[in-house]
Length: 98
Image (tube, rainbow, N blue to C red):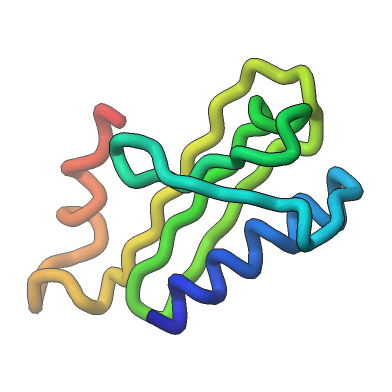
C-alpha cells in the first residue's frame, strides 16, 4: 500500500514539475488493464508515463514531450523474492525474447 501511494505521488510530481500543472487540476483514471491514465488536463492526455512497484522498489518513467508518439513501459521485480537457489542468469534467461 505504501508503494502504491509513493507511485501516485511520483506521477503527480512529474506532471507538476515537468509539464507545469497545478496539483489540484490533475485527474487520473485507470485503463481497462489497470494502468493509470491522465484524464485532465486534456492537453496532456497523450503524454506517456508508466509506474511499477514490487517489494521495496517503486519505479516511474515519464515522457517530457507533449507531442511524442513514444509509449513508455517499466517493470520492476525484487529478485530476492524469487525461487531460492536460482541464479540471476537463470532468472534473466526467461526474458531474453522481451
